[in-house]
Image (cartoon, rainbow, N blue to C red; front, side, top):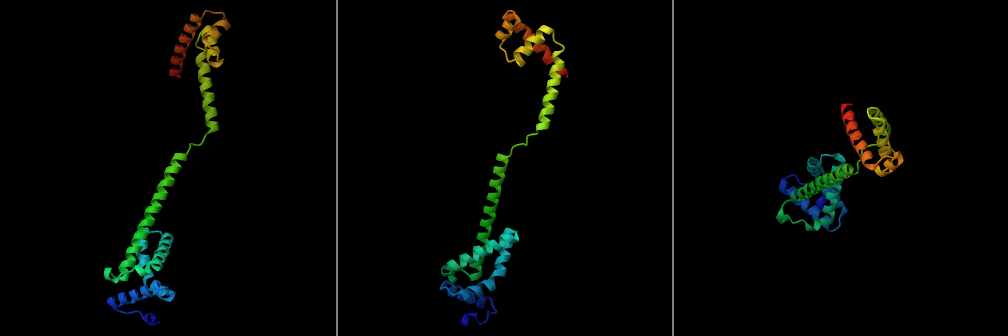
Length: 194
């Protein structure tokens, strides 16, 4: 194979040589493609690495670039530029696409994580808080009159309606309502102090 004998030394000669290798690769010549890869991959990796930054991801992009070159070698047109220009354009586009794809994936994961994140339930903290609140309410209930305390306990802790509290205590409903209202007002004042 004549084109693989020795790579040219000048820039124009190198472009012609690489174009020849691409032409042969387009016809399915694996040796020509291997030589094209050997001669161009360091420069392509450099371009990709500057965009992608991550070495492993850069290698992945390199594989994608050269797979595209193998599949599309017949589309190279020397009238539009050198093989390096064509190759570097493909590499840069692939690298930018990879970064955008990676960023999009990272953003999507971040959105999912924040949407799905639930604050861990602190059972011990919840029990302690509940006990403290029960103690504060119990202490505040001591400032009420026995009739107010009994009415509020039956209504709020016994889950009775005002009418049921009135029947249980054999007291008229308006009296129960006023006892509870006045008792709640005193409780509120007492709890604000605590």
